[in-house]
Amino acid sequence: MDRVPPALTPHLDVDVPDEGLSIGEAAVVVGLSVQALRYYEREGLLLDPTSRRSNGHRRFHRNDLDWLLGLVMLRETGMPIAEIRDIAALSRAPGTERERLEAFELHRQAVLAQLKRTQEHLAALDKKIAAYRAYVAGEEETIHDEQPPARP
Amino acid sequence: MDRVPPALTPHLDVDVPDEGLSIGEAAVVVGLSVQALRYYEREGLLLDPTSRRSNGHRRFHRNDLDWLLGLVMLRETGMPIAEIRDIAALSRAPGTERERLEAFELHRQAVLAQLKRTQEHLAALDKKIAAYRAYVAGEEETIHDEQPPARP
DNA sequence: GCTTGACCTATAGCGCGCTATAGGTTGTGT
DNA sequence: ACACAACCTATAGCGCGCTATAGGTCAAGC
Image 1 (cartoon, protein in one colour):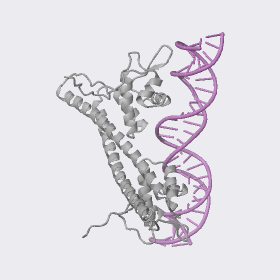
Image 2 (tube, protein in one colour; image 1 turned 60 degrees about the vertical axis):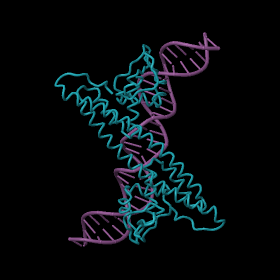
Image 3 (cartoon, rainbow over the protein chains, first blue to last red; image 1 turned 30 degrees about the horizontal axis):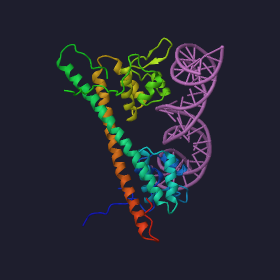
Image 4 (cartoon, rainbow over the protein chains, first blue to last red; image 1 turned 45 degrees about the horizontal axis):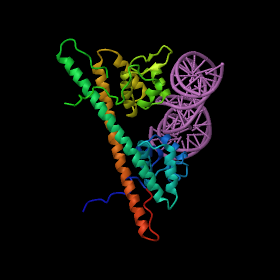
């Protein structure tokens, strides 16, 4: 019984102090630049208004970081800023769980399609590589003169 | 014995007439816009100078289209224009097969990494979706009032 | 004969997603 | 006391990859 229940939300492997992280620290843990973080905030991609210290400095808490990780996932799977903004807005409104689910399912389809295309491309790339390897190997043993490959 | 030997080069399933295709037709078969095709030519991404009719109109032949398909593959797997330009230059120079192979192998690594990352993201997305599905389902049977999910 | 459409060149413009710069405050270390 | 780093806002700028526009030629069809 040392199994941990699966988290419902992307879960950070760093432990976040109660007072939260500075923007610089947060940037490091979520893999963004400080400017990008501020930019995302301006663009309304963050779930909650960022909490601030008395001096105005932002503080990022666990939930902020979890949200950011999800955000990064969406971005890196090709979702544009505008769409993420919509999802953020939806996620702020109670009772919109169905719609959020729908949005995520739709995006899932897009990611699957993209993945499939990339795998096909990879296969084509592998073929090209194989052809070149064959040519290069052939050239190695034939000390002199041969047909170059059909210039692929 | 009706097996066809595997092609060394991306092979088009359309048959190209001897006089080649117009830029509009070529654009359709390779899945680019006419402007993008012209842009690629200007940027030096094409293997050979495009052949022209007496009236100056471009004609795309089989080998052009094959090359373009490879180009599209590289683009869609995230290779920037500049890098493709380098590969094109290399592919024009004889005796650079090793270097081309190297370039393709390097890109293959990049594609693999990208693929892996996307698959991880997909897993995360699936988790999120599962959580939402569970919540939405739970809400359906409980006629009234329940905890919303931990706002993922 | 005239319009229509596909092509041509040259060049400007745009959308996206940041990134950089200027100018300023705060807090910490030496 | 002061320099230095990390943060702040506001705003401008940029790199990439096209896309759009202007202005023109040519060939085919009505």
